[in-house]
Amino acid sequence: MPTTSSDITNTLSHTVLRLSEVTEAERPVLAAQGRRLPSVVVINEIILTLKQLLFPEFFYNLRSGGTMRHYHIGVGVDKLYTLLQKQISASLHFSTPDNVADEEIEKLACEKAAKTVAELPELKRKLYTDVRAIFNNDPAVDNEAQVIFCYPSIKAMVNYRFAHLLCGLEVPLLPRIIAEIAHSETGIDIHPGATIGEYFSIDHGTGVVIGETCVIGRNVNIYQGVTLGAKNFSLDSNGHPVNVPRHPIIEDNVTIYSNASVLGRITIGHDTIIGGNVWVTHNVPPHSRILQGQMRSETFTDGAGI
Image (cartoon, rainbow, N blue to C red; front, side, top):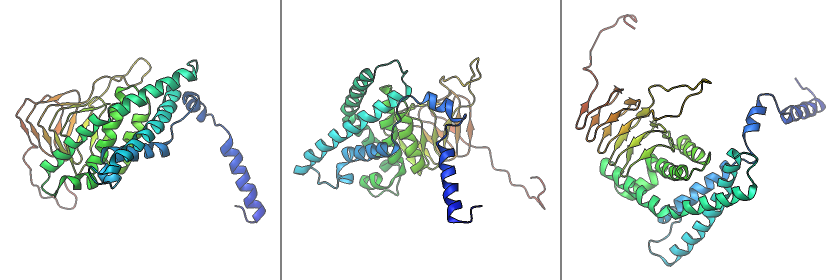
């Protein structure tokens, strides 16, 4: 252990040298990273700018219909496009082979950023259906404004629907970062590749997991702890998991209560209720009610039966 000022300086210098070296464990990671990396700091700024554009009265504190609304939204759209173009470019560099010219990547990034911005009105429309769904399904909500301000479901859905839009435009890496930011903030883990219809409601939300190949219809309501996951997956000749449809299809007007696990490429028919704490691995016909088995009460003494 360092005991003098000189010893401490030498220890710090030695640590700097060791951290500066590229280790054998790092080499394959660095070789696969491409030429540039996106910035999580800038991506968080993109998400805030997105919220200001989608909900200007809430995140810009503007009056509805005020004369400054058009100005601020115009500035925001320009800012979003500029930030997004650079992060899309970095994401493309991350995954594009070195033999692709920088000019081609930059042109593609501009196109994808412009297409993303053009879809913002439709993104806003879908998010307001989610706000309405939460308001309709939760008697604890006083008004829809409270949903936008407070509910983790809307925070997660803003990120998910934006990330899903980028997925549809074949933007690499960036959608996963955006989705994981929401996951870390809300405890709601939605893969950006999942397909979710309008009027989607998550009550409470903590511990919800929705897998990449999930397909969810309209007017679906799920509660905390629900997993829409894979039962198993296939491996290729090298032992790597194969990316095939492996998550559930949830049809319209389905409610899934807390801590239910719905696993595998199965279909939950429309207008079905899945009760809490159940394990579902087979198709369920429409208008079903799936409940856990009858509770059994036992008396144990000194740990017996455990």
